[in-house]
Length: 279
Image (cartoon, rainbow, N blue to C red; front, top):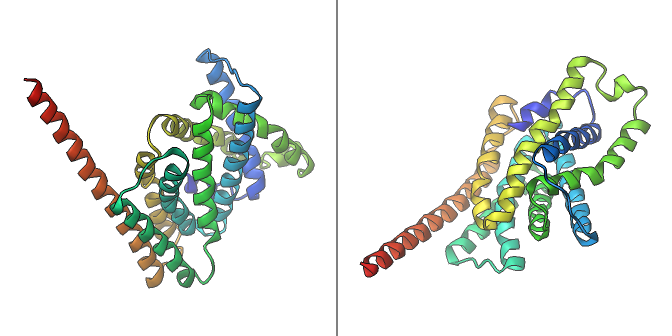
């Protein structure tokens, strides 16, 4: 549902929104860290990982907000549709998560859907590709960190805050202008901390505790909502070729879901067989 929120921040440019989002997210996280009595114990290697993850998530935010404000919300939804398949690919490359034939068929089908976007929109879907890759790489880097969801996200935003503040200082004519020029706008900007921290904390916890492939399945919910918001609520164009492209993406999701259900049934049958043998 975040695109609706970003649409209400169109009084600022995307870089300004991301700068505000970074600062307010950091402010929202530090009191929570103190309340949970969590101390940050990070060596130079860990800080390095979180500097990389901070850059990745900051870049992802910027592309996402830019796409939303420039009426390319559906292309952004495509990026988050292909993101889970990037997770599957990176899971296989770096974490030894094997993909069976049905899963590979799902990945190939999703790739075909992305390629069909080129004639559908008349240009290379760079917004979708960058969104999918950046968020998948963010998940990979977060999985390599020793920090938990809360302290990891706090470190990430903290390393970005100095750059965000410098941008706001040197690109605003006054303090009120930096906050949108009114109390209503200032409150909307402050709210970016809350609407950012909650989903990212949940994502950070998930990326450390479940398979990237499983995480990928759950991530299909968000872009589906974004797709319909862009199409039905904001009237972004939907041609037949573009719809066919998304049809291939949804077919890929169905293939992967069918495989996941098949594997769960096998696991359940194996458990029942072990219990029967134990009796």
